[in-house]
Length: 248
Length: 327
Image 1 (cartoon, rainbow over the protein chains, first blue to last red):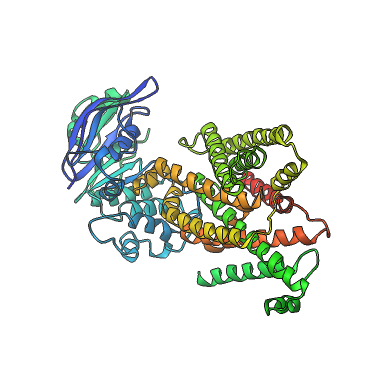
Image 2 (image 1 turned 30 degrees about the vertical axis):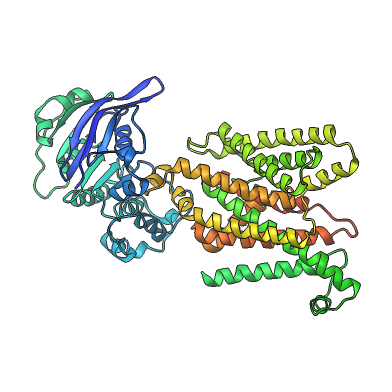
């Protein structure tokens, strides 16, 4: 179980303020989406929640302990963080990337490589090199490596942004199943997918939280339309259909 | 994997054998065996006390350069990073020139090592500060900063040589050292060099996991438990120290640190626990062969070792660069 808390979280780059005094607490396992237009501060927020960036003001705490007091090894064991960009400098084999994800210091014994390969359906890819993988395969490998130690917190920045719809859905379904036992926080662009998968949505605009609600609550309000400056039409998806696609 | 290391080990043995055979006067295997058997004629004595230690020293210097190159490429996540191009060697050369030319009343050998180390470190930091280590390392920026700093350091070294040498002996020593060349070491010097190689190998291996993580990119390395900024500082320090040790014993020997890790990756893949020892073996074999060529190509003159490695390494570097531009 992981409790993530931001108090007055403020981030700046030079004279530009990226996050303005964000305060919220996430303390239940579940799938939390971070939404907002480009430049709203979504990735910056995720990097601060992961501890990769240090706040200019305010504090981020995991389980009541400021991130600055977590050791690198404990932090890595507690959090699976998938940044937006993942481009290895060397042409690692899938097995090698997974081993690097597995060998984080955890209180529980590390899982076996075979178990991770099986859990993510990667058995046939183990010996393949990174450069020979398709986008969908790469996304599965990096997810498997990130969550290899079953961390209680999973952070993902636009997972599968460059994937086709089927692979994107597959990736989100995997994250959704992780969210039964872990707090999964995901930066998302696709409103339809966010509303469908998330249990809670945090809507950012210009570094402020403009809404923090359930998908139904967000749909019922007007924050989405105001933030994206769009007029949206709500349509109920039919049972057995994966996605709503608007035409015309 | 074991087989690949056996291949690399055999290559090193062959390279060392070539180094022992090659020279101003070529030695037949029979003559070498006779010398090893304890014959006390002049030729055998020369082989044992002059050529063998020199071949051993060349292999050990090569191992240091291979290790240094693998660390630098790992830290910068870039197969074109090379100590010579990133200022470390040029900085070490400035340190060594000062040690050789400025009378300080201190013993020359430890002074040379200490000043080479400080020079290597200072120049590497200068290049990194210009190109920006903690931003996304950019190959063009690094290489350009490296070229500019190397040119500055080269000019500074020439100036020091002109301004400070008051007897021609010292100037000659610095000049031959600048062009790269292994001197036949004393037994103590050889033991010291061997000790440095062992320490360097152990220090490098302690970096292996961190270098593997860095290869995934800064953010992913952080996510897997590394503190990238702290690790990079430590790894650059270690790499610069290893290169400085190599430069202190072998002068400026270019491109070995670039080539050895490349060939190493073809053999054992990118994981550093295997790549570092493989680069050491390949670097050792390369310098042993090049030193053999340097001693035997134009008898009785000896070609500076740095010229041979640059003639081999330069085209290799250009080949890699052109392949990179194509992709």
